[in-house]
Length: 107
Image 1 (cartoon, rainbow, N blue to C red):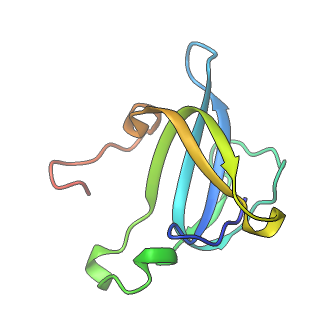
Image 2: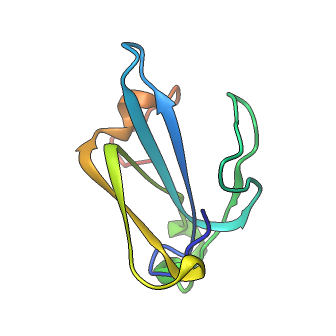
């Protein structure tokens, strides 16, 4: 789902955790989205390219990042279909669903 807001270009992926529970992973500040709504993806598929869109547009290069969130559910709100926004609810630690872990500096 591509959304124009402070997150810039975003993708939300519906997945299952190790126990079979539904989890949503949200990625933001993407330069280019490579998937379309409803498309099924699997591990190692390229879903987007990192970037600096939204409120990260003017961030110094060394501070650019991909914003990642996880949650058990989400809500859609605002405007027309081209302006809809997605917000995760029942937040989870996204690192629990990532193979790569952050260091003490958040890298």
